[in-house]
Length: 314
Image 1 (cartoon, rainbow, N blue to C red):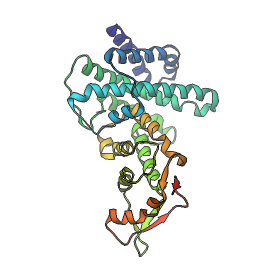
Image 2 (spheres, one colour; image 1 turned 90 degrees about the vertical axis):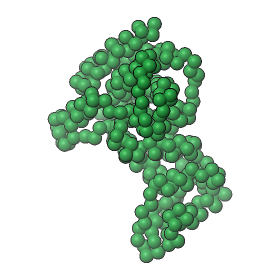
Image 3 (cartoon, helix red, strand yellow; image 1 turned 60 degrees about the vertical axis):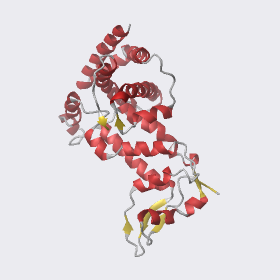
Image 4 (cartoon, rainbow, N blue to C red; image 1 turned 135 degrees about the horizontal axis):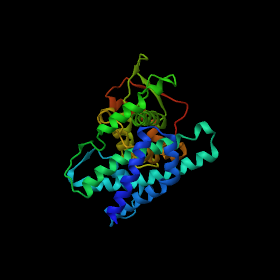
């Protein structure tokens, strides 16, 4: 049964590759009508075949694994298990969004979730062969520090074809960023702004009014303290872990999978609702002093935004 399932997945993956590499809308339409449900079922089935003892994992258990900075040989199969969990979840999420968009959004805005899902499905064709080699063929491959999605040669070629080719200039553009790189950059920038807004920070200056650079990493360290009793809807260690996962050095060497990006957005989403966050008043009033201590400068003045993106509690 497993071999038959593998063959079915590979056959559909070849169709996905052809539709993706040729940017063929008609083939994609045919795929979603005829093959999508079968592929989704087969992916769920291969997960059960490869990991028959796996239980239901909650979001935090999955997050714990897929955003690891370092992966050892012995952890590789387990990492694949959690990646498949995230993949299955995000496929379902994007397909539901895609179906909803076709009934609620104007025609020009309907394709966003579909394009994201197409990107993910192509990435799966590459990921599946790697996972098969590890889980079934017992290939002794080692990723090492951060190398969880090393660029495949075909993927480099596809990036060139899809995002720097002539059709981009027809939209008055000289080319586009790889969509995954762009999404990770935007995710990182949104987190940098969020961590300032949640503490009510606009900027800091010295006593002469000169702006002092404030690295977001310092503010994420403030979040990580368990002594504050501030309340966040997401585990503090995962906020920091995902932020560090978006570092330019890491993303310059590898590309995150689309389902990892979507998973990060899913986990972080509750943070962007100020009603979900409670900051202690004594901590809030002491932020300037904490920044002075962190920066080892007594001449720091904190300039606040009108109000923090959080609820202040006594």
